[in-house]
Amino acid sequence: MTSLAKDGGVGLEHGADASVRGMDPDLIVRGERAALGPLRVDLAGAFARWSNDPEARRGVLRRGIRTAETEAEWIRAAMATGAEHRPEAVSFVVYDVADLVPVGSAGLFEIDHLMGRARFGIIIGERRGQGIGTDAVRLVLRWAFADLGLHNVMLEAMAWNERALHAYERAGFREFGRRRGALVSEGRRCDEVFMDAIAPDVLT
Image 1 (spheres, one colour):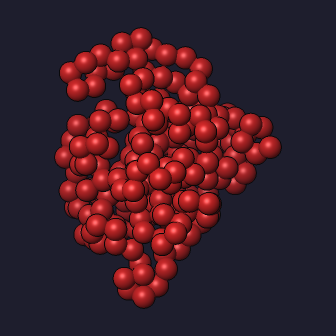
Image 2 (cartoon, helix red, strand yellow):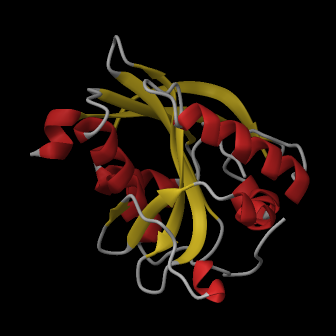
């Protein structure tokens, strides 16, 4: 499940997690199926694998090939940005809450604290179709509204990606418009779907 917002990420491979080293990863928030934690440079290899996965790439506009080295560079920059007092972007590692295996990443971008708004992006590289992505979306939205004090979070997605659109709706997003034929996916034009979520709908 992906949106068209930014995503990103030499490290542990194929379902690796901090428990390999005898310790659980740091968690910021835990849900029913997913948990969110801070970015980790040691997961750069996993981030590259998720970003290069053919299924995941179908739902994003980026066409570049990621490597552990490029993802490590991105992660370090994103960690620094997210640590600021009023961050312009915040990214998370998404874990399967059942065993704390990292399965993807999600985040908020173009955060505008004055207007109380941001854009959302997510990529789930493993264990799709198990509700982890939907729960991760809920957790990021609640964190955006309750912790950052934002009011509106939006995303853009491809119209053909109905599974992702339904997941976003279950998490609290609502479609508010389409840009007809504005995107090209796998050689075919498709509509760009705009969705947003607001704090009163999610926090009540």
